[in-house]
Each structure stands twice: as C-alpha cells, then as structure tokens.
Length: 406
Image 1 (cartoon, rainbow, N blue to C red):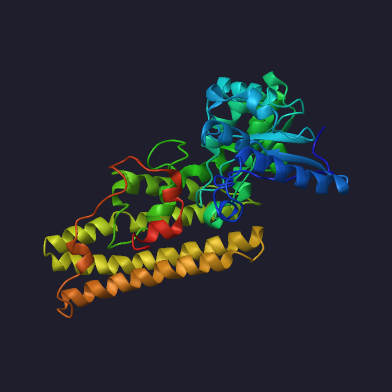
Image 2 (cartoon, one colour; image 1 turned 120 degrees about the horizontal axis):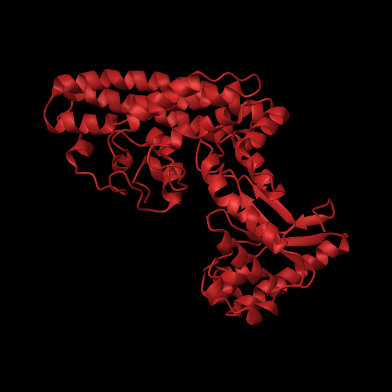
C-alpha cells in the first residue's frame, strides 16, 4: 500500500501537553491516551467520509507510554499501547538522529508489535538548521535506517526536508544525500556507480555538491548540533555570549572553504555555490571580531578599536553581498512569502553592525565615557570548541542575537 492521492497524513506528533493545557482547565483531568484515541477516531471518521486513508506520526503513543520519550523502546509496554492504536491508521516512525542500524530495526519491531497495519518510515535530509545543508550527517543517519527498513520489510519510506526557523537552506542542496539514501534502499552501494548515475540524472558532480556542506564544518565533521555559519553570522559584537563556540581555526577554514567553492562551475546550481561562498566570506569577515573588540576595549587600545571599527564596515559590505546572493536563491526556488523574515534579519544585522561601529567611534572620540556591554564579563552558553546545549538553542535567530528576551 504505497502513498497515493487517497492517503492523507494527519500528523498529530509532538503534542507534549495533550490534556494538560486548556483542555484540563475546561474539562478536568482525563486519561491522556483516551483523549488521543477519541480525537484520532474523530479525525479518521472524517477522512473515511471522503474516502481517504490516514497515516500519522507514531511518537505520541510512545511518549505517553514512557513518560515523554519517543525512542525508549526498551521501556515500552506494547500491550498497553496496542489498544489505543486505531486499526484503520498506518503509523509513521520518524527518526533523523540515530546512526545504528540495530536501533532502527528495534524501533521498527516495536512499531510492529502495536499494529497489524503496514509501518511507514520517515527519515530526514538535514535542511533545517541554517543556510547550510548537512549531506554528510544525513547520510550517516539515513543509510543505516535504509538498511534496517529493507531488513524489516518496511516498504513505505519517505524523506523529510524541514525548514525550521527561516528555511534558509536550499532543498536542492541536499540532492547528494537524497540520491545516496535512495541508492542504499535499492541496494546500490558502489560509490563510482552512485556518482556516475548522479551526474547522468542531475548534470552535477556529486563531490562538488557535497562542498555545499562546508560552511558548517568548523567544529566537528557532520554533527547535527553544529551550525556555526548561522550563529556566528548573527552573533552580536558586544553581547558575545556565543563567542566560545568559535573554534580557533575557524577563520582559516572558512578561507579554504571559500577557495574550494569559488572553483566550482555549475550550469544549473551555480547560485547555490555563490551563496555558500558568500556565506563563508561574510562569516569569515566577522569571525572573532567581537572578541577582538572586547580585548582592545579592556586593554584601553584605542588605535586598535578604530581599526576594528573600520573592519565593521567591511563586514557590512560582505553581509550585503551575502544578502543579494541569498535573495536570488530564495526567489529562484521559493514563493516570496517568508522572505520578509530574511529582510528583517539581514536588515537588523546590518543596522546593529552600524550601531556598534558608531559607538566605538564615539567612545574613542570621547563622546561616550564607556561601552557598558564591554565592561561585563561574558557568560558563555558553550565551552570552547564544543556545543553544550541543544541544537534548538543555536538554530533560533531570536535566541542567537540577544540574551535580552525577557
């Protein structure tokens, strides 16, 4: 039973507070499984009225049974859950994170224990943590997933490409990962065959498109929780609470990445390489600038502060160039809806850079007695060269630009 126009995905995932919010205020406490079951029955009834078959994410059955955890199949009471799964709904097991084939296999077996319906698998090609695709991480997680699906007889598979917090990443930039994931499912594993077929279908060189991952390869290779090209771009020059997340060799890496991207020629996706190139340049121009400003201020080195103020002007120009290439990419691939967000973000970044530059100049000229933000010691949310908080903390523009959100 493959996906057809008669199949509708009804979602119903991540309802963490089911029965605990306004429902609780209005109705008092009800067993949370009962609420889920009752609502699901109503939705299925409506769908069947129009001849539609429903599929839904499976996570809430697991979360309600294990105290909030989705991937805790070991402490999962299948018999308890089975009674709440609608017999006319296919469950979709979604997982974008694990690298162990055996783990995926165990989760699929767990799903089969709670329903007699076909199990679907939804994986992810990582398009949702900034401007940069994560083809490498997508393959590390999805290739073992495909092997598990084949071994466990899961035939219905699709790959998601989400657009969290701005949807900056081009979906076409994930073509290498998407193609290799499909090849893995089909049993094609020879690298040269994959690269040859990729070129025949897309007209692009597989290895070249993997270079689009480069702007985020500053901390560790293919790590889903590493998106420095976004948080370095937007981090504030004076409130540098993200500064410890800048690896020491990042500036040099970005220069090398820019050189590699500059050499690539592509008829169809040339604009993607230009965006990645300009991203490397913009992030590189801003790299460590906040730390340098803070150090010069604390040292009372006004000559260096003036030079750094001039450097901010260079950063502004590189950000403007990135904006233009990214704007072309957006309007080439997307509807204009949503670009208002990008206008706001880039505009705010440029205006803030101008503001910081002016205050430095005024301070050196004696117009200002101090720059209060630079008087404070930074409290970092990361340790040097290592991420210590969840991914969401660094893929949220609003959290990256300021600590003053109360």
